[in-house]
Image (cartoon, rainbow, N blue to C red; front, top):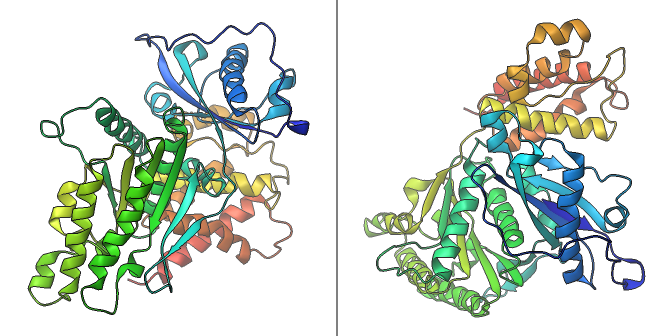
Length: 453
């Protein structure tokens, strides 16, 4: 669960709520309990430790009082919880989606909540110039960063992909901390996400780094994301490119030498740095690219000895990557175009936001606008609901039809589609939800028809 806390007036320490038990050691998880994360984000320059401890105690008690089912998403704060209302900005439940999809419902007594309290960094990215002082060789963020807040929740993929990445990272760091002999059990802490453009691979890497910085906050006091600008590492001078790669990784190594600093290295479009050496040997690539690949592999092998670094990479053309790099990646996850369920959920989240901001209206005689999840829509008998609310299923049916029409569009294109649809309505200042969805369908068909083959 994620909780966001406001600055206390005058920088004072928060009052300690009465009748709170002292936190005990981590209990063993019973077989019938589901581990659900609760992320709590706050903004406070003083009393951070005190806030974390209090939130970890208050929030599970607040959820227990609600006695409701668990589902991923924000939790509204009750009016009688003054401490939370004054100090907490947001409470977010995470990691319940797979259980809910497989079992239908997750009740409060089935849950062992794990509370993560964090403070967002509002500093923007810092830049490090390359040797020519023309391009930044990398951008750097202190995590968790305000810039990436909410990105993880906005990314919708097939069930299990995001959880798989989280579990991998937890195991990779645990194996290192426990001193597992890498000669017997091998792992490199390298992730490769590959697939067509526009599927959110880079955003997923950044969101994963943000998520892990929250999960491992108790172990690492500081987390950094370093995004490598691969194009800045190529020099017009022969043999200089390999030296620029070595220089970049020397700076990264200086960061990981701090034991309490967890560093994420993001290399987007890694094929530009790790191009297959076979092509260079055949003469179709400059020979300097061989030195770049050799330097990259050597530096990554050196980073392997440090326990507090994870390398995140993406590629649109996996066949162009050197096989030695691909072999080093622990996870090679394909991120493809969104499925029908993902397309529906993406469009549903877009429509929810337009309704929230009153860009799309819900009037004109509709009893209420139902925006059920894809799973709920597929499992709900339409006849009963239609009798009670004759127009209530018009919206999700149109939304589902739009999701079916959008087959083949990337997640990036889907997120852009509602904007293009609104630009096509007759009156942009008043747009009924049904009319908007009809225009969305027309826009989707036009985008697919006009897309280059």
